[in-house]
Amino acid sequence: MAKQSVALKLGTWRGIHSSLILLGTLSLLILVATFSKVYSFRLLLLSNTVCNQEPSRSQIRTQIQVRETLDKVIKKIQTEIQEIQNRPTTESSMKQNSFLADILGLIESVQVSLPEIQENSQLNPPINQSHHLLGSKQLSDEPENHFLIEEIRKYVKMKPNRLGKQNFMGANGTFTSIGHACFAMRKDLEEYMDYDVGDFCNDDWKLAQKLMVHGCDPLPRRRCFSRAPQLYDKPFPIEESMWKLPNNRNVRWSQYRCKNFTCLAANSTGKGFFKCADCFDLSNHEMPRWVKLENPNENTSDFLAHQVLELKPGEIRIGLDFSVGTGTFAARMRELNVTIVTATINFGAPFSEMIALRGLVPLYLTINQRLPFFENTLDLIHTTRFLDGWIDFVLLDFVLYDWDRVLRPGGLLWIDSFFCLKEDLDDYLESFKMLRYKKHKWVIVPKLDKDDREVFFSAVLEKPPRPFRS
Image (tube, rainbow, N blue to C red):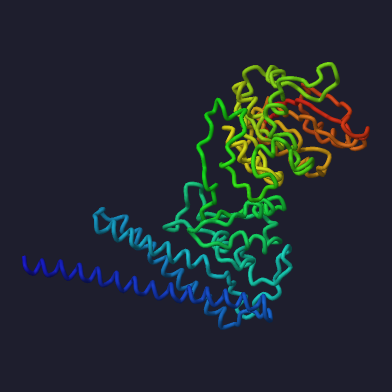
């Protein structure tokens, strides 16, 4: 028994000793790899700011050797993990498997962070590589190498899965993306991503919106806490909040001309400070919309909500309102048992906050972005005061095809008071006609608030069933 006890202790010590040796060796490799990464990064800084020097042959050979060594270590650890998994499960084997998995994840993350070096470039490294948007010299096409702020670099790198296996989506890692225009707006994006991890973000939503509107969309996620109003009061109950101005405390007003909702409702800053000048006047301007015609005896481009829903009784349940507004269309449709998500951005006023405080769902979305809905899922898409005569014809095509993608067969597209110059009308109508939708309503009337050069166009169109093509 004594010999057996000694043997067991000796075996345990050898196991611990082997694990310590392995851990020490791996730690050394990680340090070498990290040093190589840092050295490469410093070289990148020097090459972009001083004399555009490329890595030396010895440096490239060293990086290749580090990568090859890491590959060997990863394969050995994966083999050991597989052998452990094939053995009977014990508490010690589970701990050992968990330990090796943690080490494997660390090594793989270091391996992914190393610059890509091709074997045939050892003696002839690439020279004067450039990004088509930046125009500056780069050492590789990896997106993280276009930026200096470490948070952006960490965000855009591929994140490998643990254990080197595919995830349930069939990918070996997670690939985070940013909009292509972010590379051309590097200075603004680096300002946006320059923060202390775990601290409060800057009050910079306006900078973020500038990036989004100019094509840097989607933006990277951030690891800081968003700022909230200092004194946040609970929202009004839903039976009050729909048609009542919210509490001023629940908005950060620092970036707006108006500093309260009363100012917005009175349009105190003058016409044109944002596109929807009367949207905050809930009692006078918003309350009658889509339930009452302003001048019933005149030609109008307005349709009433119940008239549209009667075209497809009981079928219209969910939809999207892509407009400039405070969510009144969604509020009105909610009263008719239809759930509407409102897409908007903050055009000089807190539209998103206002929609949410009314008890509705704001979708913070620019026209640049593909709709975040799956195909053939929505019953209704409505738009007003947004897709007007300012929009480029090619952009309008992309938008309409994306709307068609998410509308289900039999779904309705409600174009509400689209206005444009008379000479452009036929071209815009062709964009809508190319959808080949069934026409339920289709009107064109003069726009009378200015000269005689503009017209209103409104329509309710139904997406047809299309045969499946393999």
